[in-house]
Length: 177
Length: 434
Image 1 (spheres, rainbow over the protein chains, first blue to last red):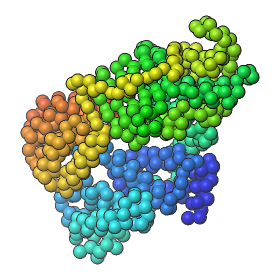
Image 2: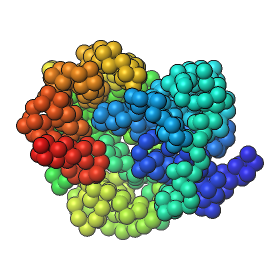
Image 3: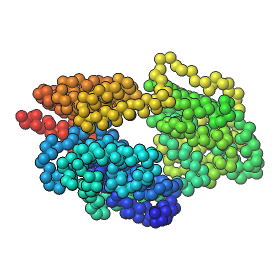
Image 4: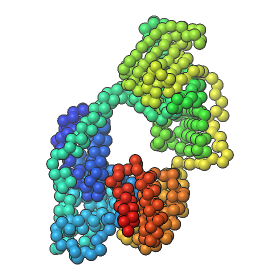
């Protein structure tokens, strides 16, 4: 947290090394969040790229509210949602690819199980998916997600809970224990 | 029943850290490089912006006509300040500011150039008479009329037979964004104080003053050229006696060469003319389409809620229910935001009908989408869906035609290996191979 404050101060002063350090520090989380919300690797790269370039263009007037990781993760999630929404508007056929496999019993290997989980996650409502991805993969607390999205903590928790319930339903029998 | 912890563990396993990007790659370098460039640009401009943010905003403005009006108006007030900086002792800052405070209205007539085509324009501007806040403005340029009255604005685009009403320019976006800056500034002082504008010379990258004689007016004057980056150059003529501008030219991104024709040429400036209220009253033309932005915002919200609901149902495999809700979107908001929600709804209904095994209905709604919203981008996807529906019906010739139309429309717009071009080619190959 302290390091982030210092990084942001240097970043606002126009230090490119600070920008690079911020990216290095959070790149893995950002790629992971974007990867969980988008199926197209090119779109994932574009989203991370766009978010970071926009973030960089705020140098000099960026105010850190909450955590830097939370801010960037939410930006990635929002951008991914927009991209996803645009894709759906023009490419409805793509939605067919995220439908569950017809014969779940064929899922045996870990790889296939992972694929099933990704597919199931893709079936959730966007806001539920975002809450789960940010909390589970982005390791953000509900309070942080709420602060960055401007929603109440209870709303975020409720979306997360509903999303998990839906996942349990979709994955029932496929994830042991 | 799966435990939450197990599900969380499985989600993490499905998206391991570094799965997408195992190591530092060229993509990372590209991101950091682009971000660094953006940061440098922002930082360089913010140094100026900290001195005079409004000036930067005007300079980077790319909406030609409103920007032109704004820029000319800026030049008018700027010119008085310019006088502060000019060497001859005849001008003192106090005199200039005093002259500025005496300005009650300005009428500017000139010519704007759009792709080399000249269009006559007139701008009337005065401090707001209604609530003492902001300004009243009327800008006419052939097929475009903008009237601002306090916070409310009307934009009439004659070529589109359209009137847009903005209830509060300080909270509007799009083209009204330009006005927001002016409004903010006008709220401080309708004619901008010399102190603020004095910074304009300070931030100019190139500044030249030539004293001479204006043949048009027959009076002594000063010709000033000032440049702001490679894309913005002002040239104006100031009367040495009145300290006011009498002619101005402006080159921007659309015509950056100061040796070439300007983006606009203000040929006439009239100060303190009595402007009657009628000038700033908008008369609604008969038979125009009216978009009231305040109402539109509410409708957009309603359409979004319905679309999200329909999409959720679609994703859950409840296609019939999804179609019903999409139908509501189409019925309720056929023209909203240029028809995008309604067009999307029809497209999704087509997909839904295909999922329900009713390709004939899918064809009907997809054709309806092409007929009513064929002007929107993304129609190649609709043609692809249409082709698929024809395949379902066994109508190979029609399917082939639709897939080829998809390729024809999408080529150049999308990557060849991207959906739906790749899929359309595959379908064509399959049909021809049979």
